[in-house]
Image (cartoon, rainbow, N blue to C red; front, top):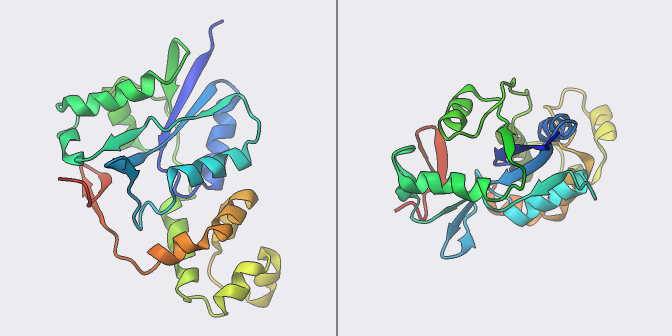
Length: 226
């Protein structure tokens, strides 16, 4: 029987336990191709408050969670090139179909499916002939986790942020049972380590304005849009 590929096109910013669960499910049946989205302006990736972690950092997060797993392939080919307005309107713009071409040309399998837990995204994947399977959205949101991380960086938590980053989760729970939910509980342990090692990224965007624009339900960096 020919192998079938599973395409997972996502932001993964940051990589969460929900992402880990999705990939674990997929790799039981498919060769999994993961496409963390990139936005490029003059050959350089644009990062914002919504998209703080670079492609290379997100790739590292995935590889740390799935080390030496030959059934998982990470690709940079889910890439939008400035000016991003050329991808609109979706479906009617030939550039929007080039994204599909970039992705499909990555895989070596003859057959493929794609994954999303979002009904609107599933419709878009169906229109672009990515053969989405029906799936439920998992409760852990990367956007919500980012906000928890930013709150820690800006000192919303009651204790000193440097001390908070260095203490393990269980000891912090014992210190303050009424404390709000902790982002470390929702992210794989190895990814927690990567985020802390790259805390300068969090500090850079924690108090920054969100320089993104949302069109047709999709967020794009404002810089490089026109």
